Amino acid sequence: MELWILGLFTIPMIVVVLCFRIVRVRRNWGEQMQVLWRESDALRSELTFHHNQMHLLGDFAQQFNGEMSFAEGINVGLDALWHLPEIDAVAALLGEDELGPFQYVGIRGVDDPFAFLGKECPLPLWGTLAHALVHRPAAGELDCLSINNILSEGKPLPEEFPWLPAQGSLLVLPLRGRGKTIGSVILYSRRTDAFQDESRTRFLYAMVVYISRALLESRIHEQSARWMRHLVSLQLLTHTMTGIDSVEGMLHLLREESADMFGAVSVHLFLHSAHTTANGHTAFRLYSAPHLSQQEERFVHSVDLQRLLSWVLEAEQPLFIDPQETIQSPDALYYRENGHCVLVPILGSRETGGGVLLMLAPATARPFDEDDLIVVRTIANSASVAIGNHRLTTLVDSTPV
Image (cartoon, rainbow, N blue to C red; front, side, top):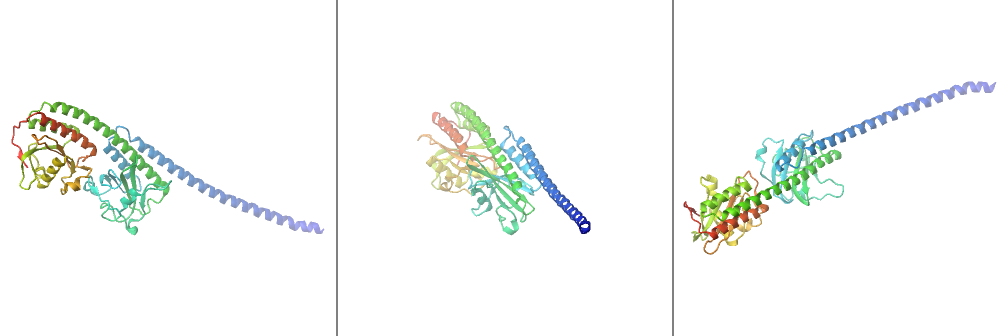
């Protein structure tokens, strides 16, 4: 009887406990399922995000091809970066070495891009750009420099990037390849901390690395095509120069062949004169094309240029200069590696005296560099041979300088 009464109370209690446990297990199971669904949704979103990134990167890569010019590659790369949601401005800088100088070759998202295109970017050794370019990342670290809050961090300073707003975030990605630093891509966002997400930064880094490789390939392709064109023009020049019998004919030939090789450049011949100037410099007779602009007229007749002409002829060494800048001493210009104007000696004998060949490129054109110097020297040597082989006549009066 007692057992029956005990069972009457115990069995319902066991049933209640079991029901409670079942409810709690189901509730835990439901909570676990919700967690799994949330993790699954997050994973699905992340996979979708990476898939979209890879798809975008593939479409971006397909826009580059072997026939694309260097300038087209820059425009395609900048446009692709600028149209990304978090990017409000982008700029590309190109140079020959991590110590500069660097020029703006493309910029998007600023009010007046033409105020910066072709201009040199300041490169203070303590600045943000210099820090990014000389930094060498550790293994697994991205080769970039991020500024999460321009206003609070106080960098970069306004003089480094005059186009950059005072608020937002910045990402500086060097362009490197074949052991050289050829430039940098600068990304700006109005939002602070826009480049803190590592996966997003890696995606941007991958795009810039691809741009760097594409630009290097385009540059090599263009250089090869330019050298081939130069070889053909030089062969024609040296063959034709042997039949030249006047200074005017030589100048006309030099202008034509130089235009084929370098584009719209002006050519000036400074032939040695037996006289000396009042300040003791070597005197020259200038032969130029007619109808020079006032700016070019002032430049070729300037006293500072006359001093450089004397040095080039006496030292038998070329110089790069830039007419837009204040002309420096020959010692200061000796190690310069490029410029929109190049002076090359025309070697001569005691009888002919030789002279100097001056080539001047427009300010908007690509400056002459060390690679071009081989070609310009060959042109000057051809003129030297023509002067030495013939007593050249002149049909018009030259200008004493």
